[in-house]
Image 1 (cartoon, rainbow, N blue to C red):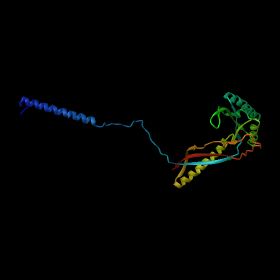
Image 2 (image 1 turned 90 degrees about the vertical axis):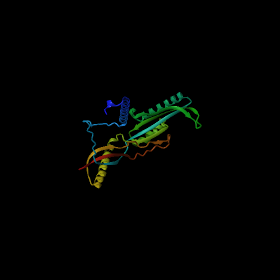
Image 3 (image 1 turned 180 degrees about the vertical axis):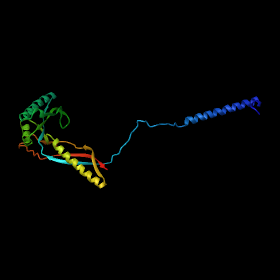
Image 4 (image 1 turned 45 degrees about the vertical axis):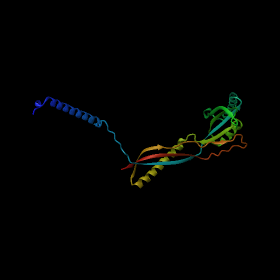
Length: 254
């Protein structure tokens, strides 16, 4: 039987059912497409040539110490003034500081070797925590180039210059020579350790790839002295240790 021979009511029902089925399929396909994960297609850029190279090696550290006699003394001297008002304390400090600086110059300390280490003005407190005036303080940093007479210089700065806060430390005027000597010995020490490690590992030591200086430089600790000592101040100088630590990376030779 052809479609045209069907009754009108049946043909309408068949068309309606077909349309409904097509709508359902359309919705199903739409939902399926929406839930599908996207597919990304990528291709490497023509200019991308990133590579990583691992270079086998031996990493060691070395250290060495060179002892030298200090040839310079760093003197720290200070004065302070306590008065009822801040302005009065400042004026009193100015007079004491001028006296101390004049004495340093009389000892032969050049202006380039005289620096201000600190200057402050503030309330002065009693042990109970109340303010009983104001204190003004000034600290000078001096370079003394004859370590054999530094004790005499300190006595003069205290007794004739009026210094009340005194300290001294020793160093080298030009530490680079001693540092270079210690650095060469430290690198030799690192090479010796690396050679031993290479032998133990059954490989041959190659050229140096990198050298790092891990040295921390500093002066000898400052010694504090009480002002107004009756006997002449004696300051043994001794030796100053210059220590250098390095890290060296060696290649492994084929």
